Length: 218
Image 1 (cartoon, rainbow, N blue to C red):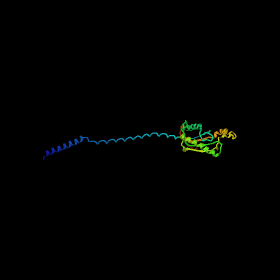
Image 2: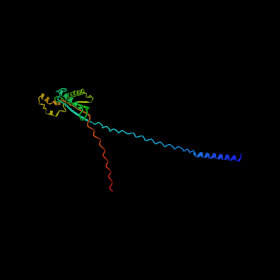
Image 3: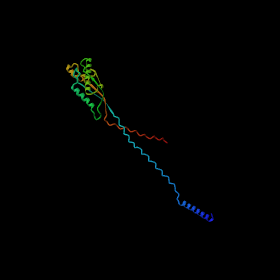
Image 4: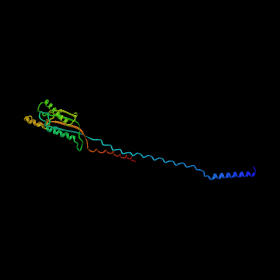
């Protein structure tokens, strides 16, 4: 190869190198893509709203009930209730069972039935008579719906006379004496129970505020 050809090849190589360098300069360098922005943290879930606790219901208040009636004027020497005795007992029990402004009907816990007699006759005879009178009233209460399991009965003969009959003189004629002693021929009915009070419960007392502690003197 002669020198002229070498020069031509050399010149061509230089041109190729220059063209390559120019191409490299004109092609922009590809920049790396920016990293994606971090996703925002999820908002905290709202706390569930607690429903207000209902105020505690006040405990029911019960009233203790004790009532008594004297069924006087029973027939002489008989264990029988008069029409007035039955009417009085019906009304007495009806009032207990009926609600009032202060309470509901009475829940009967116990009934004590005690028979009595006047002082005419022997103690033995009158004791038996007073017990029979108590049983008659007890049976009448059961017929009214009172549970016989809560009824207690006994006879007292003439041991508990009505005070006013002390003025009945034994010197009276028999008919007059029997009439004078009529209040003693009786049966006592005592009822014990309880009833739900209808009075509004008092609000609970607020705790007293604590007083600040006294500062020591300086």
